[in-house]
Amino acid sequence: MSSLRPIASELLYGHADQCPFGLCDGSGFRYEVETNTAYDCRCRAQRVALAKARSLSAVIPRRYRDVAFDRPPVTEIDLPIVAATRRFADTIGEKLDAGRGLWFMGPVGTGKTTLAMLVSKAALKTGRSVAIYSLPRLLNEIRDTHRAERSHVELLDRLTAVDLLHVDDVGAERTTDWVLEELYSIVNARYEDQRSMVITTNILDREALCGQITERTVSRLTEMCDELPLLGHDHRMDLRVG
Ligand SMILES: Nc1ncnc2c1ncn2[C@@H]1O[C@H](COP(=O)(O)OP(=O)(O)OP(=O)(O)O)[C@@H](O)[C@H]1O
Ligand SMILES: [Mg+2]
Ligand SMILES: [Zn+2]
Image (cartoon, rainbow, N blue to C red):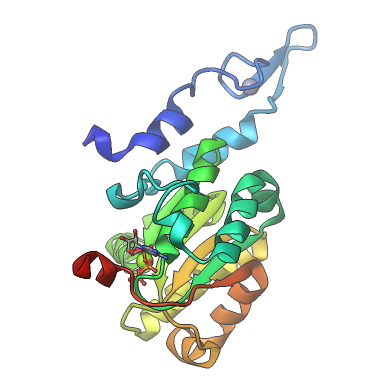
């Protein structure tokens, strides 16, 4: 079990009782003795965001845990797309602060999830809060909370507060009005808050995607994310032939 939560737990929570700026006692508050007042430490906003993200999934799946820019399969993926991903990852702090995201689109097995995981890894490495879900899994979690009104609201609140929301396989889900509405409310909440998203879709054609996840969701994602199209064939088949 512990091997399943490596990056998130070590990087995000390992030193939770220390102030990253060396200013407070780790509580997130500073105290002025003369006037007997407490005020927020510089680390407090980060603490609040991390606490909210704590119950979300920030786990890089095993298959993608060791992905790196300098080795296969990433070195075999379309160069300009990898370069754009790398530029984004190298300036992840700025991008997250500006609410900028990436949208990997392309056919099955072209490296979309691989590249998206590199972005999430970069964010986690700089101590940012990240939630990583495939859309079907995210919807399952939402469904599970639905019985209790309060936790449903809380989950949406957390999904909005996290620095980076990474949603894999958007558009792969069989759509129902409920699915479309939930996806829209997450995307819209992050859009309004100018919070970054990284998403992957199998659908390249905009019209088809609008048909699958609605135009208003696609429109917001388009504004939030730089689009990175991955073309080519299914590289999972290479593994089988080779
Ligand atoms: N350009 C490439 N060259 C060689 N191998 C690749 C390339 N792209 C992906 N791979 C390999 O192919 C497999 C699929 O990669 P990945 O999961 O990133 O694809 P994907 O685009 O997310 O696919 P899907 O749409 O099915 O989710 C992995 O084993 C990966 O290492
Ligand atoms: Mg994928
Ligand atoms: Zn502090």
